[in-house]
Length: 240
Image 1 (cartoon, rainbow, N blue to C red):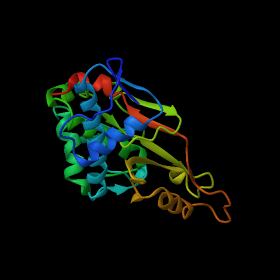
Image 2: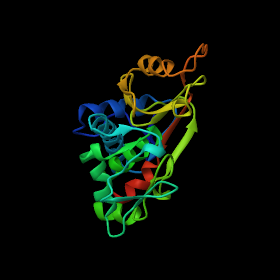
Image 3: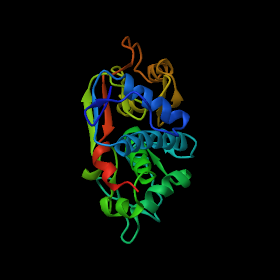
Image 4: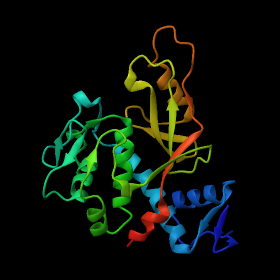
């Protein structure tokens, strides 16, 4: 349910796109109360969730490869490989470096958790003031779940699966550690994007992971009852 300044909100904001309308309905149908101090704050969350989904689609359509850190690559014009991940080159704008990943995917190879963080950065870039983005994320270091504290990723237990949230498919009988599970963007309507697998339904995600189990495995992959999301209210302070 959506609580706007202490009152239950029933009508959506004006001029929502189809995906934004779906997001509003899912927020409204959630059993967890969601509190907003203004319509602009709600609009920002809907916009950023929509941009997360669009970023996932864009990464899916890019030529970015799936690979472990040893065999990973980032465009050296923007990034320096270190022991802990890829650091932003001096005098490179964070906005330019993040945008390049989605423009020149063939220059990149990384695994699924890194993909999620990059999707979040790109979606935030599309949603807030570019000067604020470059100020907030001027010391980028990217790999796995390494991210700037201002990105504010929040993980909670439960099944509040709203489009734009990140969900995790666990694969208990994995053959290789890199396939212990798959971080995915929930896109709504039973569709998920996971880097290395692509876009598919819940069942298709599970089936894909089940092909990556050790011989004679008996336990199926499954969707964990948890979700990750961004602190939308904090990030809304930097909106246009």
